[in-house]
Length: 193
Length: 193
Figure 1 (cartoon, rainbow over the protein chains, first blue to last red):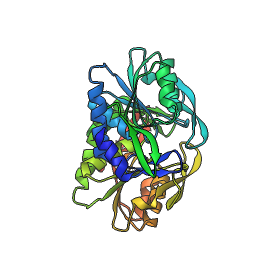
Figure 2: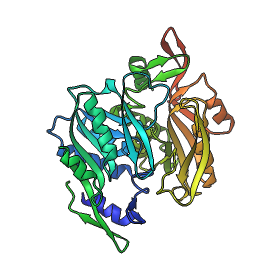
Figure 3: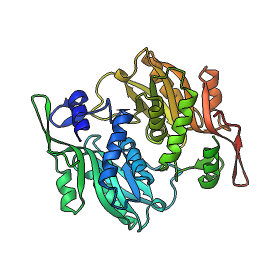
Figure 4: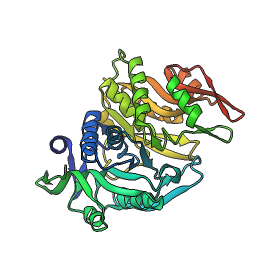
């Protein structure tokens, strides 16, 4: 997605060996107009896939996911990273290790929001090691629902998340694919969308 | 907001003495069309207030906040509840106690996203004891920015958050105000919008 790649080049910051900071438009401050375009691109790709739910994980996935859900005219569900006292029955869970935050968390979705008839599009802001997506897949499949594909805003192609998911049989579609960082500059791989 | 009150009556669940569960359209599964209407109502109210930023707190505030930001044509910033390794400089913080989750967390926003010229509209999904809003106000004022008002989707009017904020001089505008629960039914106070 050319608009996204241009924005990454303009406003992204490389930290250390493998972190791209995009907190000015995606992960902290959010540019609604870019999110709307992202939602449209995902929705066009999956227009005829019969998607019934968009699933993401709090918090940075919510903005791209809600616009994708709007463009597909389906509900969005965000998985929770911590239980709270109002979640009390029929909770589906998976363990997810975050390399960024260096913690394992129990990710959960209330089972009542997913059924065997559901065809789910997973949307997330980043794909690195694929742990978050793997956790979401586990939860969705516990409910008997089908994961149609995983839509990613920014893929770190130098990490193994995409391989892991594709080898397990799940299509991955990424709007921007980071091949490597060279002299403080992002070099992209060809994106899927 | 009549549409919201009707939705609460239809899909909200009362838990115990003081919890309204709205996880089918706001706090877990999210109805984009309701969020879009909510965004429009807030934006109409503040159309001439010169708002430059919408600020919320992860995670349930993000959906109503991003649509409000879109309708006002300004960026949205969501405060973080946990630090991560990509947040490393100029972080403004406040301590917030969550009665729902029964934990104190350090809420933070990168200072670079707020300046003394900013006029901020705070948006949040719930107002109960006002602790989250108070923390956001502290952060915004640390940056020298001005809090114009606090827009709330669902206010628990039987708790003291609104009083706390209004006595401190901040206008509160709530789309639905829960007066009390009676025989398993929500009784509303007159809403602000």
